[in-house]
Length: 413
Picture 1 (cartoon, rainbow, N blue to C red):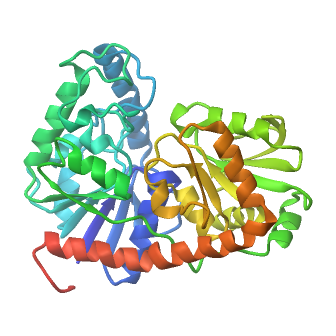
Picture 2 (picture 1 turned 120 degrees about the horizontal axis):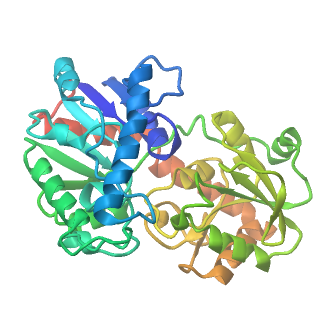
């Protein structure tokens, strides 16, 4: 069985999840190759198909052209909005490789022109890392829900019309997907799968749920005290880890809620901020350590082992890598009871699910998880949850079963 995984990157959110699946499939004997537009790994089976200087430049041009297009026809976008038409051609290259399955992950921001999918005869599997594949262009709908029937007047756009950009893009997307010989969508969380099934596109095409997975032998806790000493972190404080790319500029990530929640805590607590650069400063009255982006997994494991709790205050969340990584490292997680968070966090068992947008309850969750009477049990349950349900080896087997179904086969190649 030969599978081509297509993802804009092999790092960050969707890229990390896609790369883990790629490795899990290879371990299970699948001939998996991953094509990306930006590569950080040293893995020879991950191919940067935009490696040339010219193609890198063109990717930036495509991003700029898409932004101008969206601004002209829908007004400035408050949050990420993509039409998927400004990207590289890839169809001939895929057909030359003759894969059994094309597996699409996150493909926007100039990576490829999704119109190239039209009339593909190779079965296509699409992992839903966000809502884009069944909306009129937004990646998260902010609770709008118009994708259930048809989009239009998108709240992410400043001047979208009733039958404007988002409406027409959804019609185009539906037309292209309808032209495929076989397509299946994978909701990575129960929330995402349910949203997709309700959508005007998901009502026609196959939608299944298979979670992301993680290498449980790699992501496991190291000694907390040793980790703090190694990282130069205080031994006598409760440490919270808060991580997100563009967290200070993307409202969905919920920075405004964690910053307010921290005002309800005392000076026994300090904050570790991963993914943002900056000097040590104060957030919500508490000392914050900005450590920037972490590209080394072992360093990330050290930080997750060093803290008492991770906090994910997103307002819409699919299946957070941070939550899964934290739990796998035996660190309980506090998050709002939204999206796919409940697939991983069991309230007061391995973390805390706070009432949506409730700052006081978010703070209470942090206190609860740091409480020495609860923390050790929470840590044991955290690890067990991931081992039982999110082991990448088991997740890969589920995907292989889906691939075989798409190929009308019941046995492995």
